[in-house]
Each structure stands twice: as C-alpha cells, then as structure tokens.
Length: 318
Image (cartoon, rainbow, N blue to C red; front, side, top):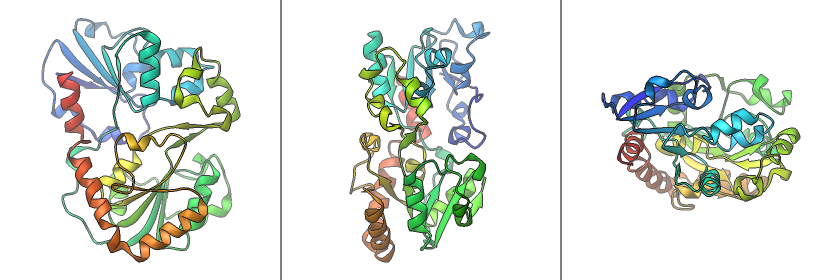
C-alpha cells in the first residue's frame, strides 16, 4: 500500500506528525493510504490519485466537525459526501455509527489515534513528579485539576495563556513549561506518577446551536448533550500517558469513550468530581507502589494493539 501524507489542517505539534507511515508503505499503484486532514480539507486537484482502486484515510477531527454546521462545506467534507475514500478510520465511534447508518454503508471504522512505534520507551524510569496536566484551560474541570495538583510536585504543560478559553491570570503561576516539543513532554510524562485528563470537547453556545442545524443530528450519540455544551472526544493524551507508564486518571463523563480501548480500574482510573480527584491524587501519590501494576497493564495493552504499525497493518488488510 502506498502512503502519502498531507498535514495541512493539523497543529504544528500534532502527535500524528511523528507517525512516519511512509516507512511501512510501498510503491503500490492500486491501494493508497491518504494520511492527514489535508486530503479531506483540500480534495481538489487530486485527479492523479483517481486510478487507485482502494483509497483509505484517517479522520482526526470528528466529532469536532459537527459543531461547525454553519460551515456546511467543512461538515460535508468530514462526512465524505463526495465519496473520495473507500474506508475512513475515525476516532469517534458515535459518528462512525451515525454516518454508516445514514448512508447505508460500512465506510467509517472506529480507531484510536495510535502512538509512533519509534518513540515507545522500552523501560520504566523512576518517578520524579507526582501529577501532570497537559493542555489548555477551557472549563471548570480544568480549573479543578489545577486547584488540586498545585499542592503536589506537578507539571502544567500548555501552549500558552492566549490559547485558553478561560483566561484567568491566577492560574498562569502553575505553568511549568510552555510549547515544549512533544518528545520533551513525553520525557516529563514518563517521570510522572499521574496524568490528568478529560475526554470532552467544551462547546461555546454558538457551536452548540450550530450542531443542531445538522439534519438528523439527534441520531448521533455524540450530539446528545450539546445543550450542556459538551461532546465526547478521544484525545491523544490518554494513550500518550499510558505508553509512557504514567497512570491515567481521567474524568468520568456521559460517554466514557476511553472504554472503547482500555478497561477501567485495570488499565486506568476514573474520578468523578473535584473532591474525588483530591482524594485519588492524594492516595495514589502516597501509595504509588499499589498502582504501578495498572500502568504496566495499560502499557502492555497499548504496545500490543495501538501503535502506528498496528494501525497500518489493519488499514492495509482491509
């Protein structure tokens, strides 16, 4: 299978920029993996690939597209209304089910954004830090994380204050590093007992309203809580934490899409609210030896199922 990547539309620090699927590909002239959102967002002028009998891509942004229903063209592209691809792997199981049923096809396939084979650490390292949050501040859930972990040996990694949805300057003091290269963030994560995460998209009111303009939106489970201004999204950080043997402590939500890939209590731990978060961070940091086995079980699951090589093999066999 031939591989050609087009990263237009991706963030500069996106995990997928490290995947190098080309190393697995060949010069096949019939089957092609068109990797990257550029293939979806900029489909014009690609007639040289029309002769491929099997075209597959990976959609990284669903269900984000559905909050942009005021941009109908973008939404249609995400749904592959032009039938550019034979198969599309997507991180949203609810959108995959919805689109397949809506179009009477089995085109969309649920998959996790994998971890690059070349960056997998073989050995565990000694923990130097208690807890880490990596991301922006968009919701009270994020403020709760920062309120809790400020009392521990923590790291708060972020692109910068200007990217936050909630720009409360009181929380700038907790930033420990800004706009780090991904490999350096993985190194910090590897030395950290707990990584905090929320698998939710937090919508602005206008985005929630836009999503409800999509015909048949009620049938997509990912949109069932738009009035609460949330949607589910399987982030890359859970797998990144797990691959680096940091215990994933993740907010329980109405969907819990993480369970598509990992088992609670055996491979990660939920927390339910700020008080529960406080108690679990305190318990885990003080009794780390009781929880290390969870990180190892999750790591073994991940290296045997969720690497770039595993995903490419699945794509090429379809």
